[in-house]
Structures are given as structure tokens and as C-alpha cells.
Image 1 (cartoon, rainbow, N blue to C red):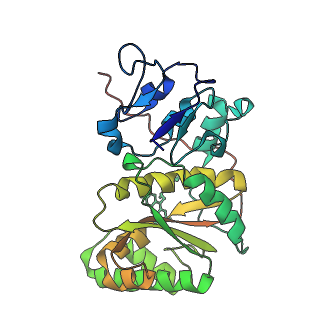
Image 2: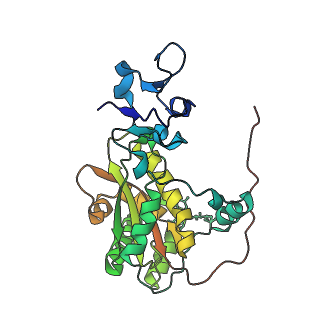
Image 3: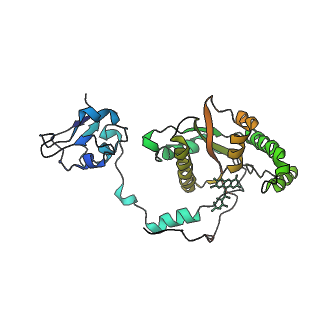
Length: 272
Ligand SMILES: Cc1cc2nc3c(=O)[nH]c(=O)nc-3n(C[C@H](O)[C@H](O)[C@H](O)COP(=O)(O)O)c2cc1C
């Protein structure tokens, strides 16, 4: 079986598959290939990144990729297109949540969320972001403590906010992971050149995708910094060998809802 198979009885020869292919593997029409039906250019086939654009772009379901059949790829629901106002409210109304209800997160809710997040774009469709989900409050508390211990070593260095955080911790608050019921960490190979950006995008996607589930998130920036700079914190994370944390979020049900959209700077744009 070749890389793609065309059902010639349904193919409309529209050429969308060829135009959608990011690596230009598919050609059709005049001259090459002579049939006018889409076909791959054999000598560059190995450049295929299995992104599935050829299958997804075909309006007739006539193109099958050897690793992706059209019947395996769900059709889009045209009636579900959101308005700019709806997306605007989703994005502008999202807040970093630092007050969580004492309600554990069910694994199946996180599984539903991750099933959406896995569609976030990844460099060259590498899909190399991996996840560690911690649902155990004690384990989250243990990580906060590891970060606090690292911050104590920086106390003399006038790092912004450290004193306040140490004070808060001593008073029984958790300024690091905010007593969140769950923590989601994006990790990947230390030497993967794509994974840093892919993980950040996946986390940003998760941030927004969590909202319709009634969940709120907050980026775990202090934990991330500590994981990169403190061997103790990196060990406490318990990631597989050769893997590094590329970001993370606390997640849970917010204690209260926000009623307004706070002001933000105008986008700084240079028009070319
Ligand atoms: C990379 C990054 C790291 C962050 N780390 C933390 C953190 O460790 N703790 C925290 O409470 N908020 C953290 N935040 C949340 C920011 O403080 C927050 O996004 C900002 O104040 C704007 O508020 P908003 O997200 O509600 O719009 C982080 C945000 C980003 C983007």
C-alpha cells in the first residue's frame, strides 16, 4: 500500500489535498501525474510528517493515508462555529485561579481535557509532549515544600517576591501551588528542539480548554523555575530519565467566579 490511496469514484480532483500538504508531497493535474488524480511524488514521500491535512482537507472523503483513514477522522460540526465575541469572552474572561474548592478532580475529567489538548499544534507534528498528572494533595504539598526549600537558598539574593512567599508559607499558606487539588506537568526530552514551544502551546491550550469543564488553572511558574534550577526539585518531580519539565499548571474548581474582564495593555503591533 502506498502512502495515500485515492477513491477515484469519489475524488473531485479539487486539489485541496495537494495544496494542504505542508511538505508538497502530493501533486495532481496537468502533466504530472498524468491521471489528474492526486498522487504522491515518490522520491520525497519520506518527508511526510503524518499531519493528516490531506485526509482532513478532502471534502469527499476520497483520500486515505496509510496511517489515517477518512472514516477514522471525525467530520467537523458546521453549526458549532463560535463567534468572535464568544471566543473573545472565553479568552478575555479566563483568569489565573489561585483559590480552589476542596474538591478532588476525577481522572476521567482530566482524560476528557487531555483528549482535546493532544490536538494542540506541535513543531513538525512531532507530538512529543508528555504529561505527568498529580492528583494527590500530599504529593503537591511536597513539591511546594521542595520549591520553598530552594527559595530559602535564594533569600539573600534579593529575588523579587521571595521574602513574601517564605512568610506566607510560614503562616500556613501555599504561594507556590496554591493548595490546588491537581497539578499537570508538561515534560519532554532534554534534547528535543521542538518540545519547549510545543509544551507551552499545549499548556496554553489546556488553560482555555479547561474553562468549559468549569475548571480553572494557574501556571506553575515558580515550580518550573525551581525544576530547572534545583536538582532537589527536579528529583522530587520524578520525571523519567532524560526528561525535563517544560511547564505546568495547577488545576481545580475555582472557589469563586470572576464577574468582569480586567484591563490589559493594548497589543503592541508594528504594521509592516
Ligand atoms: C509563564 C507564567 C508563569 C506563571 N507563574 C505563576 C506562578 O507561579 N504563580 C502564580 O500565582 N501565577 C503565575 N502566573 C500567572 C500570572 O501571574 C498571571 O497570568 C497574570 O498575573 C495575569 O493574570 P490573568 O492570568 O488572570 O490574566 C504565571 C503566568 C505565566 C504566563
